[in-house]
Length: 499
Image 1 (cartoon, rainbow, N blue to C red):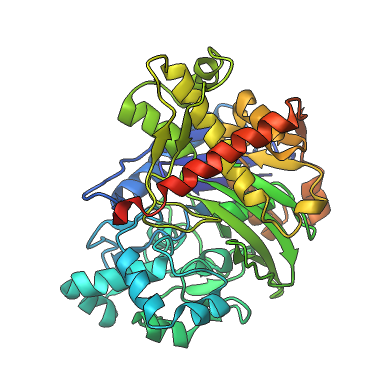
Image 2 (cartoon, helix red, strand yellow):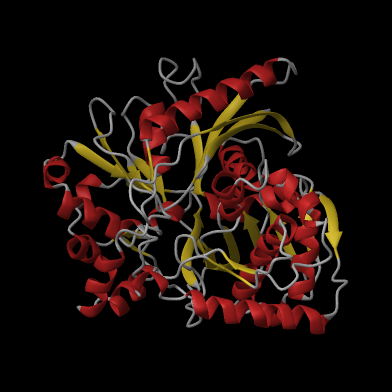
C-alpha cells in the first residue's frame, strides 16, 4: 500500500509516493512564478499553483509506474500557510492573485487595529499576533481596495480559503470546501481553544463566515474531505484523507507526537515547533500558539511555534537577485572556500522580521563588507544568518533548558555545513533524518493513518531513520561572540522601511 502526498509550498509543488515502509517510491516537482507587483508585496497565481500541482503529480506518477509499486490508497495535502485565495464557486476561476504569507502590504492595517485596542483580544483568541503574516488582514485589504471583488464574497459567489482549500476544490470540481485546524488556526479568524471559526473575529475583520471553509479533522477515511474527480485530477479517484499546514505536517512527519518534541524545518522560511499536547501554551517571548492537528475523534493537539520569514528565500535571493550562486546546492561548497565570514554579517529581513522580533518594517542588512570581501564570505554569512535566526527562536522556547538535540528537515538541512553551524550555535547535537522532505511525508502519514496504511503513531515512529548526527565542535566563546554581532546587526535593521 502506498500514499500520494502533495506539498504545495511557497516556490513550487512537490508530489511524493510514500510506501508503507515510509520510503519515497517516486517524486515529482514543479516550480511556479513569484510575483512582486510592488515593494513588500508577494503574490502567486492560483492557476499557476494548480498547474504546478498537476505537473508535479504527473511526473511523480510516471516515475511510480516504472517501479511497479502497489496501487495508491489515498491522497494527503500539505501547503504553505496563511496565503489567502479567492475563487468562483462555480467556475473555480480566481478573480485575483493569492496574497502570500510573506506579503507585508497590510502593516498599516495591523497598526490601525493595534491602535484601536484589538491586539490583546486577537492574541487571546487566536494565539497569534496582529502581523501582516496572517490571513485576516489580507482579506481586510482586499475588501478595502477591491470592493467590486469583495462584493462577490459577500454575495456568496466567491469562496475564501488557504492553499489546501483551493486544491481540494480544484481536485473535487468544487464539490468540497474544507480546511483543517492547522490551516484555520493561522488566519486570525479561528478560536484556538474552541477549535472553530470565531464570529467575533469574523466581525472584527469583516469576513462573512459563510465564505470560509468547513474545518475538519486533519485525517480521516476521506468522508470529510472528499474524493478526487478523475476528470480533473489526472484520472485519479482517491480519497483525500489528510490535510495539514506545512509546518504542522513536518512536525507530524518527524513523528513529534509527545509533549516537548521539537523540530526545525528549513524551507523558504524556517519554523521551529514544539508539541504542547492538549494545552495551549502562551508565550511572552514572541512565539505563537497554534493548532498542530485534530484527530478524527475530536482531540486537538497544540504547539508553540517560532516563525522565521526568510532563510531559504535568502539563498534564493543570492541565486536570482544577486546572481552569485547558480543553485542552493552550491552554497556549501562556495561557503567552504573561506574559513569564516571575515566579519560580514547578513540580516535577511527581506520581508521584515518574524519571531521573536516581529517587525514588519525591518529590512535586509549586510554589514562588515571590505575590499577583501568575496562571494564566499557573503554566502557563508547567509548560512550563518540562518543558524543565528534559528538560535534566536530556540532561546525563547519553553522547553529550551530540556532541549538535548534538535531534529531538522527541509531542503537546506541537506547542507552539512549549515547543520554544523546550527549545532555550534545551539550547543546541542542536530539530527537529520534520512528523509528530509518531512513536510510531504507528514501529509502522507496523515492520509495513510486515516485509511489503514498505518494503524497507530507507533507504526509511524518505526519508519523514522537517522541519517546523520552533527555534534557541536566549535568554541562556545566564538559562537556566542558571533551571535552577539548578529543581534547587534538585527537591531540596526529594525524599522528601516519606516525611516
